[in-house]
Length: 327
Image 1 (tube, helix red, strand yellow):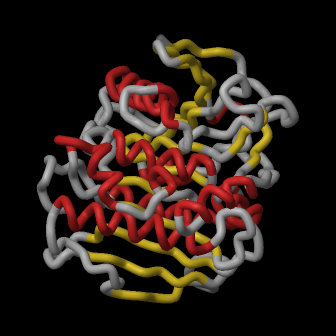
Image 2 (tube, rainbow, N blue to C red; image 1 turned 45 degrees about the vertical axis):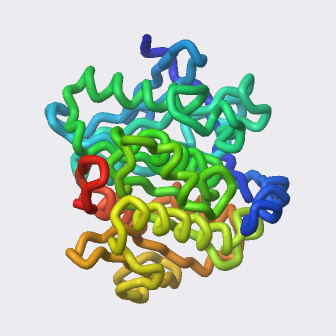
């Protein structure tokens, strides 16, 4: 069930984790908060609650101008959101892109009863598989919005930053038949391992190549850079297990993005394309000095171009059938 409730106060915090299984587990202890200033107007969203057998979660919903029927849907999972200390939501940066590019936008929020720091729990066994725990709630929010607004089922996407990035990896592995593409930003590999087989095992008979957009900063002290490289490698492995030879471990092209035309800080963008030309992955390497700055890039107006580039990648992909090439 779902219902609209009064808006509540929110503070944006983010967190995170690394390399071999041991290093990944150790660095989850580095989960750190990054304060994110709000920027959305009070009338730009409504707050709702969705509940199923696994529990209930609040989420923010934004509809772009016009009739929502047939529009794509973006589910964005923030890091750690404290609903007590700020006056407005701190997780609504994609509203300009939603209005300009024409997609419906939802932000599921964690509950402190599930995690004292309001972080998603992608490393808990009950919260990193299909039809269980938090993934079932996020998927329920997704499908309820598709049904309510008659959205385009073939163009549904999931992404997030930090803990939300890690949970978006879980969602892409657990629900490849629901999300056409994913954007785990400063996240961690699925089940804290670099093995593509873990993704395939979770996908089961629904296994398909899921196009993925990554962002990682060289100097992030919490989600350290090799984490992102392992995450990328795991998904490329999975793509090749599903569709052998579909993508190489080396980028098919590498380019610089930065001022004055691109994002406001230097970035290297790697693209991974299939032989047929489908772009299975983008990997953005940033030169930000800390985890908080990555959060601000995701949240603040100066990151608008980055978010537009992310959404351009996601929106270019539609759902494909299991074991079919990237489309």
